[in-house]
Image (tube, rainbow, N blue to C red; front, side, top):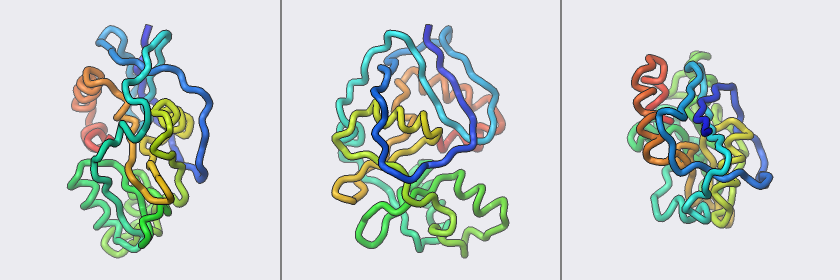
Length: 203
């Protein structure tokens, strides 16, 4: 039996390159009879668990990210500017890079909510470097997708930068691991939750 589960928890992006333990295979299909969802809460980390699942079709993270342009922000950008970028491309996190393109942090919606909005820091005058998570975990393009998946599940966060020669070349999301039919189920559930109407589009 496959379990498709939402886990809601306070999370952190960590601070070091992580080599995960060998990952279990990921499911390629799911259906409504195998779906179990916990109540909505504050922050989302999605996991698949299935016995005897088949491996992903992508062999490396480079295969996953392809030639998609990666959106980034600067430590000296305003939080409002970064939020405009996230909204315009419909993503929930941005790698934060210095003038040389090196990864120095990651800015997620959770960072913005916890370190700007609820503490009354105006987004127009607060800098990204004041609220970002510094020194996030990342992997190289030749890393295995299952390794990225396990790092995100273990750390309970949803986005993992991909870096090569200290430069950000992409970012993967936990959503990238959901097969198309699974995304359809997720989207239908998210539309039914008033909280998810706010958080869901940025998953």
